[in-house]
Amino acid sequence: MLFNSLTFLVFFVIVFVLHRLMPTWSLRKGILLVASYIFYAAWNPPYVGILLFSTALDWWLARLIWRSVDVVHRRRLLVISLVANLSLLAFFKYGGFLLGNFSTALDAFGIAYAPAIWNIILPVGISFYTFASLSYTIDVYRGEIAADVGFLDYALFVSFFPHLVAGPIVRASLLLPQLKQAREASSAQVGWGLAMVVMGLFSKAVLADFLFAPVADAVFSEPGKYNALDTWAAVLGFSGQIYYDFSGYSLCAIGLALCFGFSFPDNFKHPYAARGFSDFWRRWHITLSTWLRDYLYIPLGGGYHGPWQTYGNLFLTMLIGGLWHGASWMFVLWGALHGLFLSVERWFAKDRINLAASSSHRLGLTLFTCLLVTLAWIPFRAHDMHTVGAMFVGLFKTHASEHLDVVPVAISCVGMAVTVRWHFALRDSSLEEYFGTLGDFSRFAMLAVCMVALFLVSGGDERAFIYFQF
Image (cartoon, rainbow, N blue to C red; front, side, top):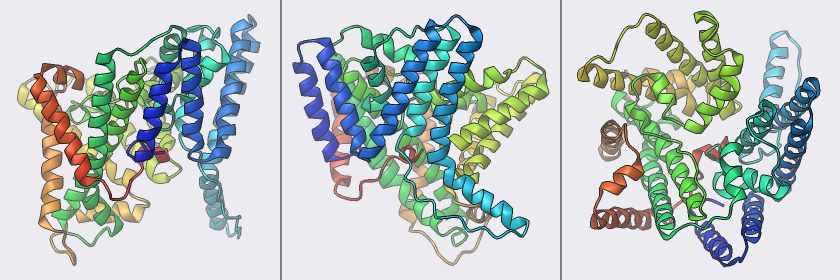
């Protein structure tokens, strides 16, 4: 059930009306819980069992951890939670990848091995709800939150449909307290929530799918056949596509939650205006980067045990972050590139080289960061190293057998330039703050343009959000 579908619109209206009609807070939460499981079952009904098993196990283990005073026993219970959740994630998401690489390794030693075809379907959203659920057991183990929540509240925290399949990764410490107290969204909250949904759908359907995706799809599907201009347009196009696709989903998720009175954390903050790669990861997929920081990088030692261990921790964290995105060496390569970027940046910071001393330096650093981030999207989008190599060669190719039409190429390049300029102008503010500075007529006009554009591009293929596959 895609957010950008008529089916979801009907689903949301029914759930919203039923939720408002319920006389008690318990019944309202019950409506949301049932709706969330229906929403998930629409993808693949049998996989509801996996979601329910993971939810019940972590709720039960967290209560045991909370009640226990034996440090060793608490640690064992946490290990059970980690092993159970990560084993499920590894089996469904990485089983085929591991089997294929095992077969390749045997072939390298002259051992012929033909495994059965791996045709197990990946449960949608398993990476997101696994990380959300693990945040609960880890925080309870650390003593940061109490495991005094009822099972139904915990089940709603894990399965709440706005964030279930593609984030933001909402932590238990943020959402569970909101579930304890009765809440009803004000008319202002509902209005702003629906406005975010409209802008999110506009970002997805109009900007990501209609403007940026065609050029990226054409060139990445036949790498090496196009000249430098077309290849650059495709690389820039995918950079714009993935941003508007995922930030559009995040806007929808945050807006939908707000319509029910719940506050979700921001997931993007003008990332293409980042001044350096640490700054980029404070602005891109914020809920994932902070999760990796708090539950992986800092437990590994963070930056407190010497420069070389710090570089190793950064590199390992980004490798795992890359692999989190999918079972492919291309995602590992993408993570490795960002690990390298962060490590080199850390090395320069160690020597206190101020690369942003003036406005011109800040602009240069922003453009340099944006360029390397954009080039790193190539392995993220590519299916194999052949495509990566062909795309990089294509960036400098003067002659080609095929050419794209000039209009989509211009739209892709200009669109990305406008995006960077927009991010640079608003890097220290939020969309809500900007929207609040507009007059009533300007707000109405902006939303009207979004809705008209959505209507004009409707009727074609409904593309799933890119991060649904993760």
